[in-house]
Length: 270
Length: 153
Image 1 (cartoon, each protein chain N blue to C red):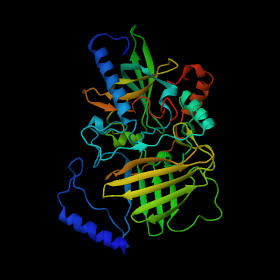
Image 2 (spheres, chains in turn cyan, brown):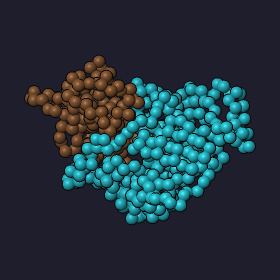
Image 3 (cartoon, each protein chain N blue to C red):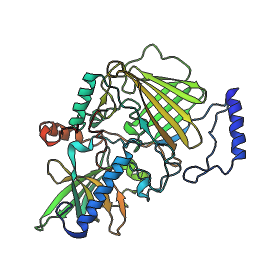
Image 4 (cartoon, rainbow over the protein chains, first blue to last red):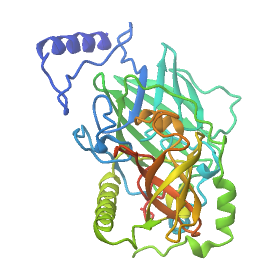
């Protein structure tokens, strides 16, 4: 009922404000909805702060670059990571070693949010009434997540954790737990088997999903902390094959580096 | 071989300006969506050691997690050195305007701007390629990608 009301209001707004423009001058279009009035997340997205198609001729529109011709629609933020004292020392050591210990070097998929809002690789949502599937180009992995149902009782710890989804108004809330120990949620930020990540996806209009991930791990952090960013619709983009172990020369190269730590380790600034 | 730290004149100025721009870009993008890559930049490559080389492509490996370009480059004494460059995987290159075996192919002469391996070998992170017609395209992320901050916070 509420969903239908929102749909009607959205349609009304869309009619009343046909000239509503995005930050880059592209028309803002209403959030697509399913037959039952829920927002439909289906589509291919990429972590970005820019609306509309990439102009790869524009240096500022290259992945990994700040905004160029386009204007950011929303800045990304991350809380300071509330490490426990021993964990901060360990994370600092990882950074001093310039993340040579990063599991991604060995093509190990990492816990969300690390694999979700990724500047280089798109994700695809496929939404049905009772399941949300997220396909990741990064590591070519997927999460098939039941909506409104509990975790089954035969789950195993997993690199991507085990997830359940529910609706909170117009926001898709996904709670992931039962991770394998040792994933990094950002560089150096290692986690334990007590990791729990609560993600909130809000498709505020056709092109933009506001993304928030609350990270909890009582074995590593003193309190929950949050990452916020935007996922932008990438029309014309698709999730493609990225088999990290196809030609991963880095694992062997890093072993050679590890024999010569003075080559890459650093002393952090105070 | 023309090294950004050794070359004189405009090329050196240009390289430095580019480096400054890249550092600024990196700083500005630090809070933005993470340009997560396969691994740390800083373990293998030195952001302080830029290199600009012109050479002839001998082999291209369109593979994940990295595309590799191999090129023969003449050094100051005229000796041909076989360099290897590393960049984005093919899927990312495709999304950013590259066409496999069209944009660059074996036999082409290109100019490569990147960051040298810490071990001093003829290996570098390839940030940008300048094609024979002068067109410039990024081939890999800016320095620092995947490395995280200097301080755990």
